[in-house]
Length: 182
Image (cartoon, rainbow, N blue to C red; front, side, top):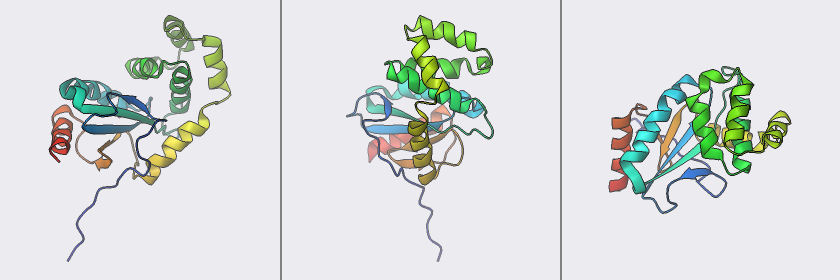
């Protein structure tokens, strides 16, 4: 008799330190471990946006950093940039901007203009990124992902259970709707 497959679970529950969108009282939680330079995460970004629109107030979305630096040399820089923006209250704006402009990572002037447009203290953000001020937080996200069975990006968890389906709108919405029924 074989043992049934049990998908991995989140080892670190969603908490106050997480970057979240949606109500803390939402009926279902979607966690993404992502890498800002990963082309698959870039492709999943508009899918997550659509899933959020489709599920509305029933969904809480959480993003955790999982930079795969051996494949994506600027992933750590991008995660640091998002965390530095978070320290100034603009995480989601920077998160979205990084995914929407992934191919522009080579031109720091592009980001400086956006950072100024957001009203960020560009000097402070630049200093924090250069000294890796958020490296520990990023490592904590990464380590929690490894312990939770993340081995690539994007990796999603639906209500704490790893989602092993396709990162497409319909299968992801179906998995979330199934979780809503429980």
